Length: 214
Image (cartoon, rainbow, N blue to C red; front, side):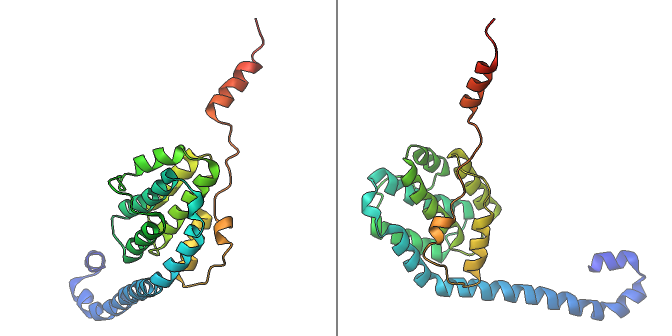
């Protein structure tokens, strides 16, 4: 703002206005920083209880899933951590809770989103939905949903025949950041719809069948 004013007004006028211009600038910036700090303090304060509840909903019946599904769920959390480029306390606690319910992954790599997506593609649909929910919680539990996380969600859903629309997840993140209580049934409602797009191989077969025989 100082640089802009120097170009727009004369030096003497700038000096007279400087103190008045600085007040709203500092007020806005300090207010914004205070909002971020208080929001993050709330998220970290409610983290342990929220993660305990999310873990209960997600992992209560985890015994019905096989070892590959459990490993993929842990890789989902690892991929979210890598994409955020920040080991947020809530994410670290969520990973520990998941390991407590599902067992330690051993030497299996947890930090490769490509490996995670490859393993996810091999699962049956009910197992995929379980991993989807784990990934969603991992991406919102720190109260942020950055560009890299949004990209991960879209990639995962679209590669598994789901809609790439993550607006519901963004709404869920905002509700969580505000400290709103989430009903038990939210996990059933948050998954993107199955994609109605015709797969490439099916579309090519349809075009081939439409061509009359010579």
